[in-house]
Amino acid sequence: MPSLALLHASQLVTLTGPPRARRGEELSELAIIPGGAFVASGGKITHVGKSTEIEKLCDAETEVINASGCVVLPGFIDAHTHLVFAGSRLDDYEARARGETYEQIAKRGGGIQTTVKATRAASEDELFALAKKRASWFLQNGTTMVEAKSGYGLTLEDELKILRVIQRIGKETPLETVPTFLGAHAFPPEFREDHGSYISLIIGEMLPRIAREKVAEYCDIFCERDYFDVNEARRILTAAKQHGLKLRMHVDQLTNGGGARLAAELGAATADHLEQTAADGINALAKANIQPVLLPGSAYALGSKKYPDARAMIDAGLAVVVATDFNPGSSPGPSMPMMLSLAVTQMRMSPAEAIAAATINAAASLNKVGETGSLEVGKLANFAICDCEDYRELAYWFGVSLVRDVFVRGVSISSSGGFQTAK
Ligand code: NIG
Ligand code: FE
Image 1 (cartoon, rainbow, N blue to C red):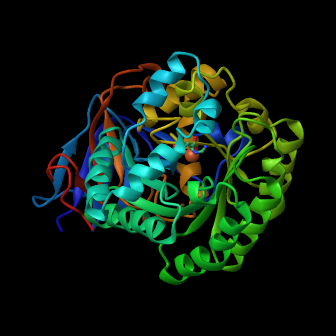
Image 2: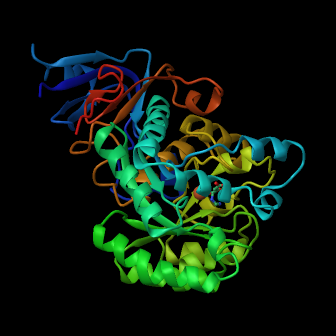
Image 3: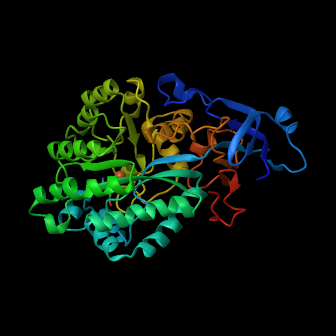
């Protein structure tokens, strides 16, 4: 493969630094190179520096990209998505506009159950076609890797079907995927009156098979009133750990049920949502070194005023992550630049903090910090070229995509027709 040189970026936002999540003041250090450039070969970055130095490494074979007038940064890493589902939640959306709440809609059998019904009825190929279209939305908005959860199947076969689709998206499109098993997303209708049996099914059949087939790296749970309580979550996640799965958790989204403290107790990789978490939960996360994944898109789309307390978390030394929570119910949005805007306007993060949270810290939360999340020698050439000269514009302009081109493993998604895989 001939090498690729990107030259003359107005700002090359490298995020060079220690290969771990950033906290405190480090979150503001983006390691920007004005007039920055790099060379990539075989899909990986081989040199990074000033354009004047990098130019000297180019020969007649090198494919040169002139990024003058542009900000170039690592592809966003979206560490919390529900990418694979079928059906529509437009009725829920409209019902909320009429004043019904997310919880009221779920109680009358709408919400997650609507999506479970449609997803069970869809074939693997149908789900793949739907997910592939969404993968192009993520890529077009500058995201090059997503964590993606199952959770709309709630039978062993339907959960496996979703996890296989997540794997196929990672192999057959440029979007890199990290799969998470979310069988404990809700109690399915056939177990509405018998929660114990569904938990036994997860522990006794689903987890062993999912671990054996290696179709998931993480196990997640919706720890919430009317879903899985703290004791049920502890049982399921302890079993998941015994099967070698790492943990991510939906906690304290609608009510403060002590989920953050449980994430700390179990040593989860991440505790996600945290809209209702108070000081004790934040302190527990800090002591246990758990990364919070903040999902402002779901507060926004549910019309809530209650965003997670990002400032308190950063002050407590937590290595915050910002992600979309892309899903059909509470956050139908794939755009990380939109999340940057919400992080700044609603959670009082600085644009630099939000970008670190959406790149290097997200990579660290997925155990991928050795391969992506910054533009450094040895890392994947996964990056976005944006139509602006100051990185803060990425969080400032909203409702418009400044992303001009996206590269995965050194291959442009536009030159490759969007979906020629570089892998
Ligand atoms: O992260 N909270 C639970 N799960 C999703 C919503 C899923 C849905 O409504 O379909 C979330 O917000
Ligand atoms: Fe979620």
